[in-house]
Image (cartoon, rainbow, N blue to C red; front, side, top):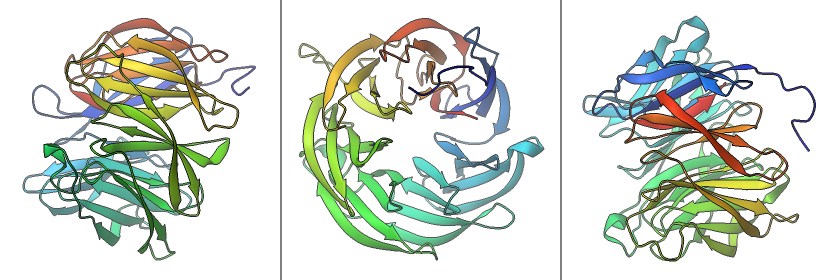
Amino acid sequence: MLFKGVIHHMQENVLIGGYTKQTSQGIYQLQFNSQTAQLTPAKLAVKLQGPTYFAVSNEHILYTVVQDGEQGGLAAYDMKNNFAYLGSALQPKNSPAYVEVSDKRQLVFSANFHTGIVTIHQIQADKTLAITDQIQLTGHSIRPEQEESHPHMAHLAPDGNLVICDYGSDKVFTYSIDDAGKATKMGEFTAPAGSAPRHLVFNPQHPDIAYCICELASIVLVLNYHDGQFEQLQSYPLLPDNYNEDNTAAAIRISADGQFLYTSNRGHNSIVSFKVSASGQSLEHLQTIKTQGDFPRDFDFDLTGQYLLVPHQKSNDVTIFKRNLETGYLTFINNDTQVPEGTCIVFY
């Protein structure tokens, strides 16, 4: 079992950002104490418009989604130098919904829900971004929200291929990425009609198994993966049978040991967890626990893996759960900390 013995990281840094439609001014920095399970009050770290998603490189460069007037894209900040602004890679129209850093490849990927474009950027010597390729997706599906392609994730698979979840077309695409940062299509998987694949994680113990959360159907799919091709093995519901109100599934995370899978529901306002089978190929429902806040879009484990923190987009607070490393069970600790409009959380 991982995380046995001495747990370091007593004082952990956390960034939480989101929409800036009401009271939020950008990305907030907090400290989390993994011994007392307490968060410090939020301090504004970066003032900017609409940082709904961001990622941190190993060199502590923050790459965040940003909206700048009529343009949207990614901005880079040096966290070691008091979040000094380094530069932006902007394009016309709305900002992306997702960003991911590959330190190994020195690439940054963004997925633009609004324009259907996935952009590949190379990290330059000065840590700013240069666009190397763009993938314009096309397609649609059966629901009114799926009138065109809406990529919601561009995630590097363990084998180095780029996996794109397209909410709009119910497709999961795979592309190979060459050393120059150019993409070549390898395959496409079709999820159940109207399900809207949103995010996906690979099992750290079984790189040939992935779990895909589908936003509109509120399900999680277990997928087999081989050489750029996905195949569905199982599907599991994220809502109780008797729940008939609006819900959109959002984030999915897997524990470092590959034994437990966690998902979030917006509307039902819950975290649904599963025990992962030894083969990784099936799931067993473990727990559905209310987050005691409104609209939990993103969540993540702290650095020790002993806690799970959930910001809320609508109730403007952060819920702290204690996580049992042996059983995977979550226990509510508190939601005393205020952070406005939170849709993304990153520990570092």
